[in-house]
Length: 238
Image 1 (cartoon, rainbow, N blue to C red):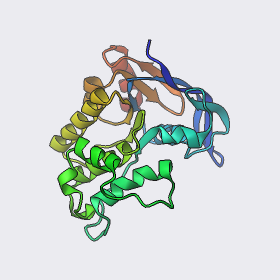
Image 2 (image 1 turned 45 degrees about the vertical axis):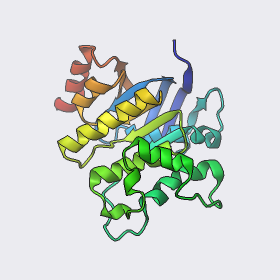
Image 3 (image 1 turned 30 degrees about the vertical axis):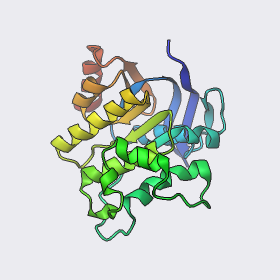
Image 4 (image 1 turned 60 degrees about the horizontal axis):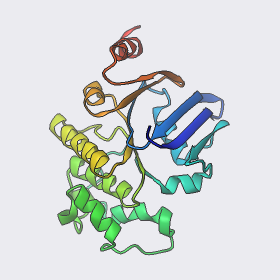
């Protein structure tokens, strides 16, 4: 049995009077690759933000290796949020964007050089090192997404959280991004939590599937025939 990295117990989250998550109990293990699906406003993004410590729960706890301090937990987690393609005139260079992933470890007042070894290794890992001095706005959508993944990798995390990383990309680029994530999962022994609407990717890449609708309505293996029944209930029944 792989070691438990993150333990979530009885987690409730609300935004003012709107309930986002109820009674979430979940263990995330070493080398996990968890796919998360659910209808719109089902709490998928909120779950990732709660794990990272960006959202404060109203009940329950989240611990990383038994530590419940959100700031300590976040250092061990790489996060790729939902993003849209950056405007071409945005001035930041690729290496500068990736270096932002180091700030939680070294502090915001320290200057991370573009040749920082962690930044270099992260860019090499995603195949973007040769673009390090290019403005990020000059890259394609798929290349930009690889830069965001490199930013998350630059902190040498144990877990990678990705919120719909293939959204708004064409299918060929989506496949390329998913192949990259799977390679990082295997080669770096990263645990992965992936929010996606692509059911094909769920079955091809993940080791576990979590179906959310403010609470966990099902979890199991992607090969389990029950998954198809749950998907029908979530997405196709009136």
